Image (tube, rainbow, N blue to C red; front, side):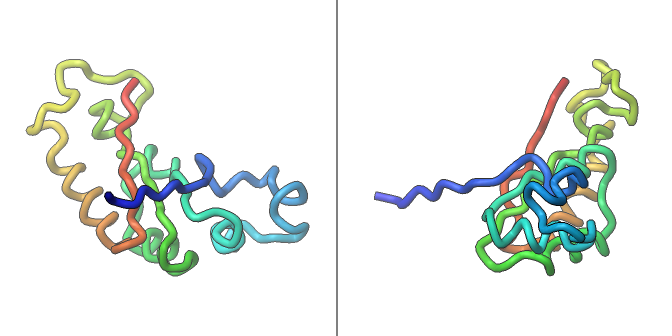
Length: 125
């Protein structure tokens, strides 16, 4: 029988209001993920919902967490809404011609996480 692994994490690691209650006082935003990774083994990266991240950003995340950590990213809204605004384009949602290019770009950059890439979340309106 396969072993099931339960992971614990939150929907973000970047809340500045966590400095003091969770992050030690004086923790810089650039260090949030490294500190977070000493307490949890997974996180949802909400920032990817707003744009496909750069390779530099993704490689930075990958370098700040240990092996066995799972970075779970949201597909960008340009894919799940077929646009950048809060209102989706119902004629284009999940239409390959409308979403293939940004989907390919997103998957390519997330592949840089290697084994640290966790589930990728499709959050529809």
